Length: 278
Ligand code: SF4
Ligand code: SF4
Ligand code: SF4
Image (cartoon, rainbow, N blue to C red; front, side, top):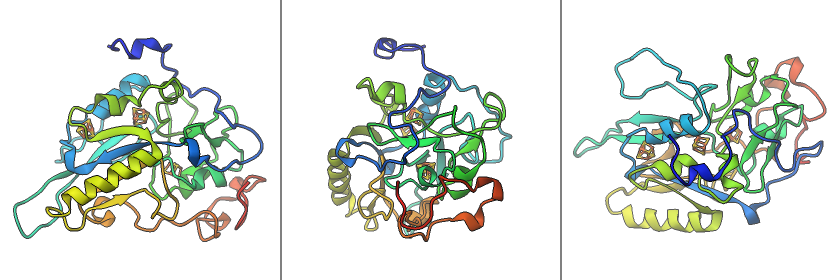
């Protein structure tokens, strides 16, 4: 059931609409207009409301996995499951703690999936998020292979095995609305706003919690060699404790995953070499 704000837009599309900047030229992200989502791990209660909201807005059917002894519902993202709340119990010298991390596409500042797609199917939207043009996507799987966050997954049900990932609620954000996962979060672990404001908010929050969590840090900001991303975390512990790569390979210097790790079918005009950005 959609609330009154949600009713201000048309029916949520199953497929993302044609993206801004779709074309034959790979454009870099325009950071001056980028928006960002903050995920504050210290405020998340693991309720999974964001997961359900995402399914609802994007009209994604349930994908049931066998119970494996964890409260975590799915091992990872799936073609029809854009976001998953992961459960972690870091070892501490004091009382036991339990953290939850909302896992989804990071909408990277320098997105290797955009850069390496040989069919120019991925591009940045006007708010800096990543979107896929399914008319161009051939389902070659290059984006799946190069993403260090292990995000895009094939949709074996609705989209002829083509990959999918979080669409950053494209139809909402371009109409000035917040992504529905953010709007739904009952504990204010999620927030959304202009990139600079979100980065400042994240840094302020880290300074507030340093006493309790000495290793607290901002993840996904300017310090990340592919950032700033459109998804920023406040982490109470190091990134390695949350399955996040500490140093994702940068796109620009050519050390990122290259043609050698891809199948021959992925080679094409869009699979540019080191140093080529457009
Ligand atoms: S997290 Fe993966 S799929 Fe998402 S923008 Fe980054 S490289 Fe692309
Ligand atoms: S931004 Fe939208 S599509 Fe992405 S995880 Fe949140 S609700 Fe799902
Ligand atoms: S809705 Fe908010 S509190 Fe609940 S799991 Fe998602 S991020 Fe955490």
